Image (cartoon, rainbow, N blue to C red; front, top):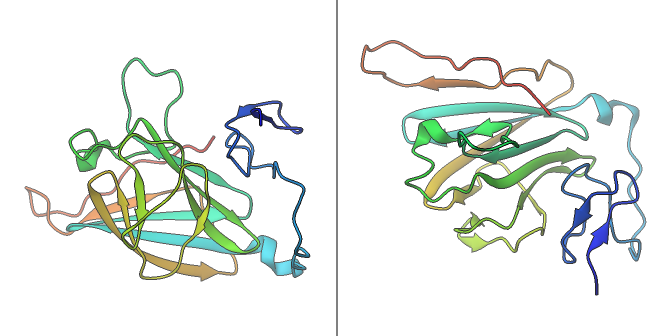
Length: 184
């Protein structure tokens, strides 16, 4: 079996990848199940993920068909993750530069490991590389050694252009907010 070439964007994906990691296009056409019908308001739903990381909360909102790459920033990188976990000591926790992706579709929000060195885990179970796993409220995620508790909130509308992070207490005792998160 050879690498999968995406019919939509021509990106060369690993042979075991069921979806294109560049654009999200389904790469296998041998599905037995009928695809579920989507209601008109499904496209307007916003999935907000709240990551509890120690005393910090990181809130991320995703619209339908949006993808967010998680990882850590490096000066020499041409491709940068959408969400840099560097403020959570990403290198010390073994988070890869391009570690995992979160994506929203009709069925919900899924997490997919992008072949990271130290792995991605959901509720203690290792995620196989390029194998999507749908997330539920209360799931415990681990990227390398960084453990995150997930709260999942579904809203019918809203704006997802910002990711907000607040510390329960900073050194000065004030709440901190992150700057605007740019999407791919």
